[in-house]
Every structure is written in structure tokens, then in C-alpha cells.
Image (cartoon, rainbow, N blue to C red):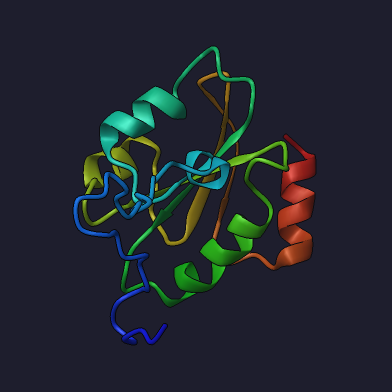
Length: 141
């Protein structure tokens, strides 16, 4: 059977036949990584996840800005150390969109990473850190 490159081949039903071609629908769902990386979080998501006193899994909140070059390098490093297979979650907050949130946690330079556990600040670092420093930081939580 010849098929077009734009259209998948479908079995043809005979006239008067009750057999119809089956077209499978594609279902979408959230993966575990999507649930453990909260990228570009708003204030409501921040309050629900980072400030949740019942949350025993540490959440690293990466305060960043689009124009910040060190932020662009740090975020992928943080992603590699967080997620469903680790003990840590990651949340990113754009300080240009939520300056009052950044001010509340005394973010004065970028990037700034604040670690929360049980709704409280556990640790913080300012500026770019390499892979070894990130591992050391996570070990202190």
C-alpha cells in the first residue's frame, strides 16, 4: 500500500462495513521530572512548595534573571542534582517577575540559591558554584 509522507496508512473499510479505522489518540501526562522541577514558579507555587512545613524533601530555590549569564550556566547544573531520583527538588524564580519575593529573602546578587526544608530556610549561597561546590552545599542540608 502506498502512503503519503504527510498521512499515515489506514486500513480501508469496505462500503457498508461496520469496521472503521482506529485512530489512536495521544494522551499527555506530567512526568515525575516535571513535578520535581518547578521552573519559572509564581508566588503561589513558591508558597505551596517551598514554604510548606510538611515538606521534608529539601527544595532548592534558584533566584535568577533572564539577562544573568551565570544564572544560565548554574540552572542546568542544579537540574542535574535534583529531581525524582534525588533527595532534592528544584524551583526557579525570576526576580524580574517577582521582585518582592526576592526582597523577602534578601536576594541582592544573582544567582542566589536558597534551600528550604519544612518551610524554613536551611542554607543559602550567592554567585556561581561549580559541580563540586553544589555537591558540598547539598551535603550540608
